Length: 434
Image 1: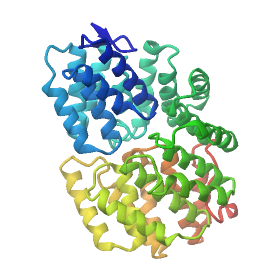
Image 2: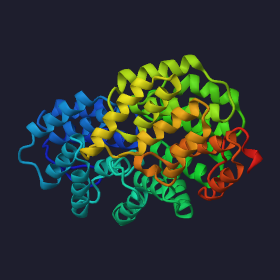
Image 3: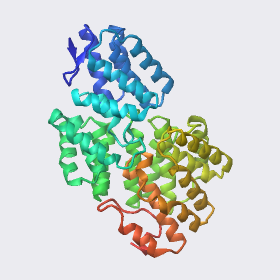
């Protein structure tokens, strides 16, 4: 029987299909272009190769092509005959995840990895800040991911891809001293890995080393394809470093060249999240509002993400609705989120509707009301998924509300409680309390 590069079985007799699958597998893990095409080459060599359909499904779902992803997964299930137990479990896991059965999928993940810990595509889909566990709405999920990666580490050794994922998980859990050597080793072993670049950016952000992160990303992005899935998101990270350094012209150039809707390389959720976050955090830093850009991303959210689903993307949709003053759309989305939460189908529960009320109050200049909405939610950011760097949008908004309400001691208290080492608070006027 053929095997993948992690020595796991592949039910195909074709060496051509195996080689193409391995290429797609590596491109999917490193977030380089061409994974879908590689999986298609595997299927051309062996149309009954179920795992190639499943690999293609995962990449398509990540790109926001849900209809095509579900069709590819259905093809995997239709061709799933005489599979090994490992392959059947792999496909079954993605079936649960794509169906929104998050708790069942997480349970299946742990059961599967107990026997096949080197099933890397499953690990990749679950153990990143925006993955299955990260988006589960569970408080404590960052620690859960770090513990999972610690348990898997002996099975991967000095593998460059796993080191990057492990480092990111440790960084998100606040274990920066442990994360640093792993991410440096990963980058040294293979620079052609967007997850390593991403992990390096996060470690620098959380360690308060913006200049190191800025220099690394500015160089690394020059060799990463502009259509790579993480080109837009890594440009967002670089723009945050530039914003923090006071380089507004360069931050704005990055936005226009790689983060704006017509230039971003990611799927709909990532476009929504990165674009909205850049615009909002720029304003918190004291830069002028770009009304046309807000209108464009508000319209995009209404069309591309009309119904609630993933917490982090929903946060940014409701922020655009608050900025644009669309109270009816925000009220409808809030009701839908509350209905889904009541049915156990929205991970963020009542958290996002409360945030929405805070953003509306902030936009109206009622900063005391914004504080009343935001302050009780401090410490619950994990409920929306995403990284700590992404959560800073919420924390910085509360800081700005305290400043605008002249409640300076409360702003100081919030900043004193901020996680140690994290990069600076890019909020206009913060020097009054910092």
